[in-house]
Image (cartoon, rainbow, N blue to C red):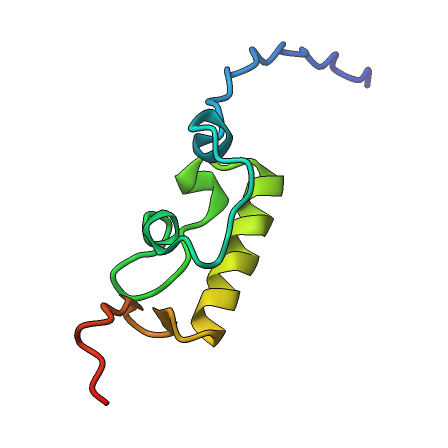
Length: 90
């Protein structure tokens, strides 16, 4: 019995969309920039994954580190995303 020849389909390359952070001109992701970090966090406080946000791998790693730093510095909540400074009781 002879082997069947496999047909090789050429996959067309899907054009990639530009990274939103580098496209906007942000050179460095800083943990103090809460407005930027809020855009990549859900209402429950989870970090939006790379495949959904459209970030490059390099930008996603920097963003993740910045979000974790902001959480440890109490600028972001671990559970509910952004915590407004007005709501914090002393």
